[in-house]
Image 1 (cartoon, rainbow, N blue to C red):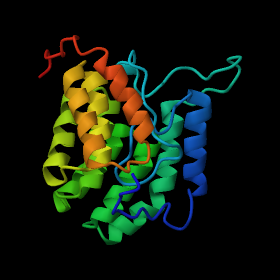
Image 2: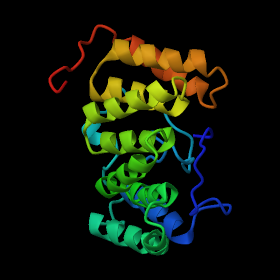
Image 3: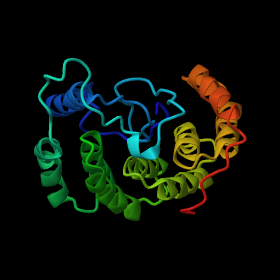
Image 4: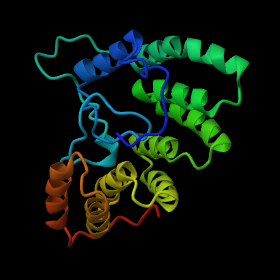
Length: 231
């Protein structure tokens, strides 16, 4: 995501906003979320992207299991996360009221909800931003990733493919597309081709070793037939 062209007002001043940092910490620590599993399009995540376990399905890609440890940690409800996101988005919403056709503001509000795992809300703002800037590949990458986390592999793939028509070598989209092809559709050959394309077109990719490791895993399952039921 270091190739981002979109500036997020919430983070461009040199770090996470306090509320946003709290939201991310709560999600990571209490829900056991592995931040960085999918690569964001518009902004760097808190940790490097990670190759995923080949046994993870699209329904569990968000790592929404209980917190590790003794099980005594307080559980955070989706309603609480939504409330925190709403509070953080308030100043951006005020700016949007004065400038309703700002794709940057719309994308930034979408980012707030994305980071709080409110993916339907995030998509609604990303869609509005894309109507104003349909060629913004960063926002469309985030939209695709949000669809993946909602369990819609087909829509995620369609959005990633739209990104790659505009920017064929975009590393974030290639990485995420490979993940969805493999984890969401069990299309090992398609995923391998996509990951190889990522390596070929981005030789200096920051997490090249992780991609190579994932590619090796995928190739071991090349005999698995892709899931075509929802295509």
